[in-house]
Amino acid sequence: MKKIAALLSIACSMAISVFSQTGRGAWLAGGNIGFSSATEHDNPSTFSTTKTTTFVFAPDFGYFIINNLAAGAEVTYLSIRATNGPNSATSNAFSAGPFIRYYFPIAKKIKIFVHGNILWGSENYNDGEPKTSTSIYGFKAGPAFFLNSRVAFEITAGYQHTKSKSDYYNSTTGEFMMGAGFQIHLGK
Image (spheres, rainbow, N blue to C red):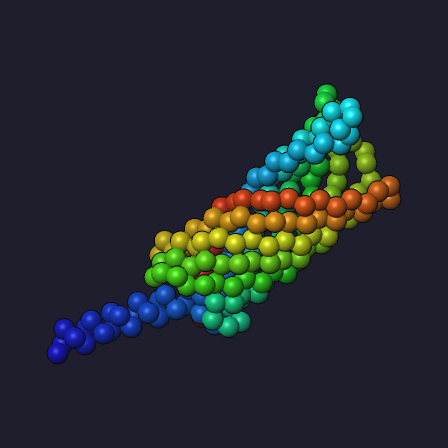
């Protein structure tokens, strides 16, 4: 009887531990890093091509408002380098805004999540161009591998749409992105 009680106690402790990962009232802190590369054919008749490389660092912090559903805020820093023939330019962008994320439990230590965000910010260029305001919306999804009851390693794939506006031009960009990062899940 004592063995059964001990086993039930251990099972309940494990269930509570797993539940607290994405349970209502838990906290989420972490982020992602990412890299993307895009090629744009500016003028097919002259074979002009612009290659853009982007590095992303995006920490986030959220709260589980119901089981498996977190809402919070994230900040994104981007370093962008564009090359067109012998010419190149770099820029740095900063944006912040809300996100929402939902987890689908599929195994004891693995959950699939979907994540959507809206960000607003600005971009500064090193070549004297005026500051550009940006609005970004995106979504990503991927597996969260829980290394223990508090830490998850995530791999993401997603899409991001960026609208930029300055005194001289307006532009929109759509890009597919991949990333990896860690999330810390804190209990109630």
